[in-house]
Image (tube, rainbow, N blue to C red; front, side, top):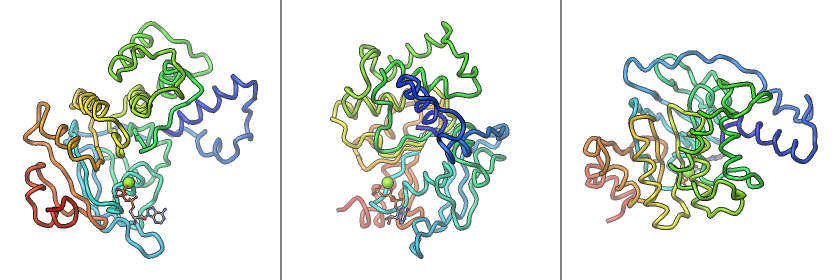
Amino acid sequence: MTPDLMEEGTVTLNRAKGVSTSAGESGGREASYGRLVEPGQLDVAHGTILYLDDISVSFDGFKALNKLSLNIAVGEMRCIIGPNGAGKTTMMDVITGKTRPDVGKAFFGSTIDLLSMRENEIAQAGIGRKFQKPTVFEQLSVFENLELALKADRRALSSIFFKLDSAQLDRIAEMLKLIHLKDHAQRTAGLLSHGQKQWLEIGMLLMQDPKLLLLDEPVAGMTDEETERTAELFLSLEGAHSLVVVEHDMKFINELTTRGATADKKKVTVLHEGSVLAEGTLAQVQANDKVVEVYLGR
Ligand SMILES: Nc1ncnc2c1ncn2[C@@H]1O[C@H](COP(=O)(O)OP(=O)(O)OP(=O)(O)O)[C@@H](O)[C@H]1O
Ligand SMILES: [Mg+2]
């Protein structure tokens, strides 16, 4: 969930409970999320949407990322695999502004310097992130969750005067279909299955129309059928969004990389000890001895 969406949800829930959220009540949070800065246009003229160069992050001397360099092309679906502790989540933390690297560069397109931006500015610039654990507003309905996500898009209308117009209602209806929750629109989100909550959160991210979507272990805990449907969903997003998918589920990675329009070109990156160990098609990395040794096993 994006910081703005989190804030929007808190206000809505408090309103429902009759609690006021006047200035100062949420202290630092409001102070840090309230200021909106126009972060500049996304420039992808060079075909690269994400550019990470020589990034290192250390925690008490331990290098979680070690000179990591990685480029993602516009419209690309990139799968990232690697053993526990390889630095996959830390990489997402750096891209989204949650963790600051010791050194390195991180650009969104060729002009937006991610390392000089706050988390909410990065989200507003068009980078959406899905954490491993689903974060939806459990007390609200599926529909209301999607509605909130629309409202949290500050480029749209001011949420105080926000009323859904027919185009927006259509968009929510389309999203409900895409995330397989058409028949659950009025259901309280807390009552959904784990997999359905994951889809709802993905839908909420998509409502904000991110240019780049980061998904950390999106199918963890899903049933086989839910996993299969999630692969379909991601494949349907190909091209319109750039996707970075971190997963341990190799069957899912196989689905994503061997199907779809650009199947034979899709790259998989293997992270190990904070840097790129191998990059290539799934078949190439699966045949790489080092990858087999540290991750895939013989
Ligand atoms: N805030 C932190 N403080 C200290 N160490 C951390 C912190 N965050 C991550 N680490 C360490 O950095 C390393 C990389 O962690 P990270 O979560 O990025 O790995 P990962 O590739 O996402 O692993 P997994 O597949 O288990 O999710 C790990 O050794 C982890 O313990
Ligand atoms: Mg992780």
